[in-house]
Length: 225
Image: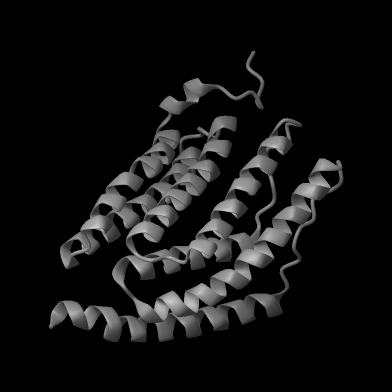
């Protein structure tokens, strides 16, 4: 009988895991259209980026819906996210002038998280608690990447500073989680109070409204003129 924590590469044939692999395979196509850097190629790059986001949703959704949650899938999903992000950051550094020092910091963070995660997996502790700061960091990084792809100056600035703050915070939080987990202690869980939720919601709404306003004048008007 197969152990529930046993990793089998035969699970690569499952649809959710195929979507995770597809996310990785999209990176060279995005890089190609970034290198062309025309209004039409930018739109195509955004379409591929959106497709990658859809695969990120589908692999988790289908894994739950089809009852195909596997140890390999639990590892492959975040690893695919990391590989996709790292490859895209490298492409943006080369084709869009993305800050090299920030690219190194992002890649180093993701690389260390993957290494630490593999160490924990060896002890069969596969499921880790959700890192709320990490989720906000990933969302901000996605918006920063999008801003560089479409040449959105305001987005490049605001998501740059927010991203740095969240990078530091999420990095420290992951370090604490992995340190406690490796010592065999109970993994800390963030107590999300209502006041924190309302504050995050208010800040998010303000950033979204301001971002959409500036996006219209800095990007959209250039396509409709």
